[in-house]
Length: 238
Image 1 (spheres, rainbow, N blue to C red):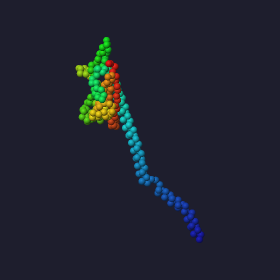
Image 2 (cartoon, one colour):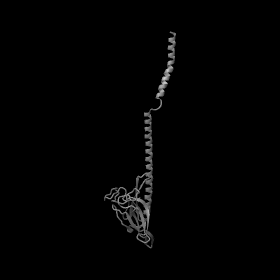
Image 3 (tube, one colour):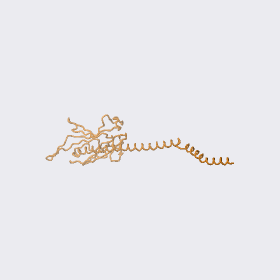
Image 4 (tube, helix red, strand yellow):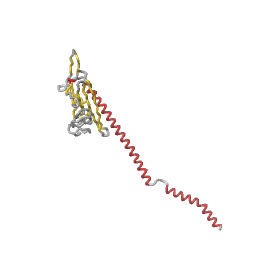
């Protein structure tokens, strides 16, 4: 009887330790991550990283486009200022051709007043501002120049036109064949009051000439960016 009581007490006394061992063994088996959990975490991490990379790429593209757009706008305005400086010294009678809206010309010939004495105006030799296709580019609907722009050209200023001392200067590159939004179809596609106007074009009225210009370039990321500007120039001479 005493042995049975002692045996029972011993088992009762040892049972908590046994339970502790079993619990410890159970927790050891269930501690850490399962393979499924690791895969889920890795997938979530990849999604987050992909989103971050996408945002960074989008921001970089926007920055590149913004930089190219600012460059084109500055170049276009500088070119129009250069043209205006020369045209305002001319007069309506000294300009050809003199097409009025809705028609326009991609070039303009003019003379500038260089002096005035005794009621007589002295005029310069004839000058021309015109659109010319870039070297290596022709009017065929193909990007022959390899710069990512089809049939693009330049703003060219020609002095002493037709004389032995004739000189030419390029004022801007990347001029589109037609003004932004316009195509060759005898319609005013961009609703600016002109029909089939070129990327550089001139319209003339009694006291002024309006110059339109569209420039284009590819950003560092290869996105085509265009910028269109216009300027009305009033003649100083009657």
